[in-house]
Image (tube, rainbow, N blue to C red; front, side):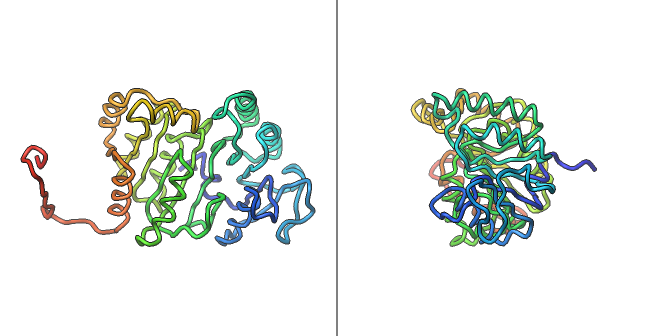
Length: 314
């Protein structure tokens, strides 16, 4: 069976961190600390031309100096440096990156030019990337915390794919007291390259994932999204919360990640045909997470419905 193209990104054996440091106030410093704190057992390669060592590990000026295979690169450097880093990754044979840096298409100005150059370099180098403008990836079963969020997300059978880093942080904090765990917390950010469809295709056959939650601000490739959704719901339940139900929130979403979302009723109709279930609020999404993560399944016709109207119950 052919390996999923994102297998090395989702299950890396070696990670390089651009912008790594011992400064806990910097993004690169927090990502480096989290990788160590969560006990990642693969190789960690700090990259920062300003340092010879970081956290007791040899620090390199570039991925080209490492001299061995790197499965995943984490990038926490200024936006203008990222296209050149992607070029170097391709030359070094590293074809997976997570770009935590902001300052691309979501902010306008020079950022749009940086994003255009980033896309062109990634296509030439054959590099797939998550982001930019994301908080990263958590894979608790792999002891991988490739984010600047807090360490210690509990292990479980739920996966969350989100365009909001704040939601990833909130649901991670909420999970512990509710005795829930995760197989993956995925922050897509601007979703310029890797989008919902790519991650769903991986998680559909991931043995550590039983159910998937989505927070959607915008879909760049609707056919891929709907195709992946249909394929995934045949195997696992999928719950979707979409922003932009109203005009004001739709506009806010576009300034957050640069995403564009079509009319809400069109999204609803398309989603209904995929077999996914739509949540209409964060409360409903969190409730779905609690139910799906409880490992309790009702047997037979033992569900009761309490309603103040017959139509609602039907």
